[in-house]
Amino acid sequence: MTAGAPDPIDRRGLAPRFWERKSLSEMSSAEWEALCDGCGKCCLNKLEDEETGEVALTRVACRLFDDTTCRCARYETRHAYVPECIVLKPDTIADHAYWLPVTCAYKLLWEGRPLYPWHPLISGDPESVHAARVSMRSRTVPEFAVDEDAWEDHIIDEPV
Ligand code: SF4
Ligand code: SF4
Figure 1 (spheres, rainbow, N blue to C red):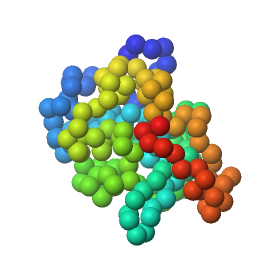
Figure 2 (cartoon, rainbow, N blue to C red; figure 1 turned 30 degrees about the vertical axis):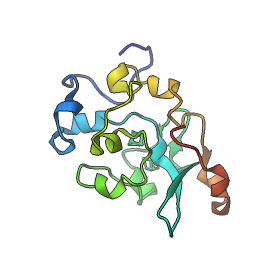
Figure 3 (tube, rainbow, N blue to C red; figure 1 turned 45 degrees about the horizontal axis):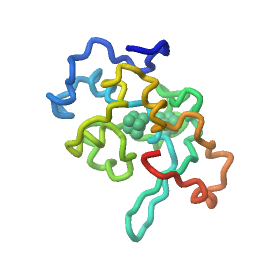
Figure 4 (cartoon, helix red, strand yellow; figure 1 turned 90 degrees about the vertical axis):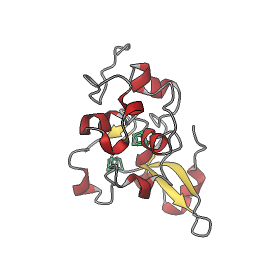
């Protein structure tokens, strides 16, 4: 860790570069959790073109997303409020990779690609994802404030 801000994800005690030496299904739960870069983009509402299957992410965030922390405000109990929130696991990532953001660490590794230098596991700094402007910190609108018909006005360009 290089910055003063505490890492909301516990990445202590993990083997160096474990993600380059283990497959997703070989990782411990701590290693799996540490892969999340904290970008918050999987908490955005998406639009899917029924004909082409193309997916666009919008800056309209899930009602539980706190964009000051860039985290779920009720992560442990979220399914009581948002039953459709997915649980990403090694055996479910194939079903979800198509809509995950292009920078998502799970998607990158699943595709056999390396992590970006701003990933906290590489930079040692949980702020680096925000400094690289890859995250949604302070950049969302809550879903209760935007009519669903207007979501397309809030489509974001990736990887921004
Ligand atoms: S998109 Fe991927 S890396 Fe970003 S917060 Fe969601 S799970 Fe973590
Ligand atoms: S319930 Fe929490 S983790 Fe799930 S999409 Fe909403 S903010 Fe994200």
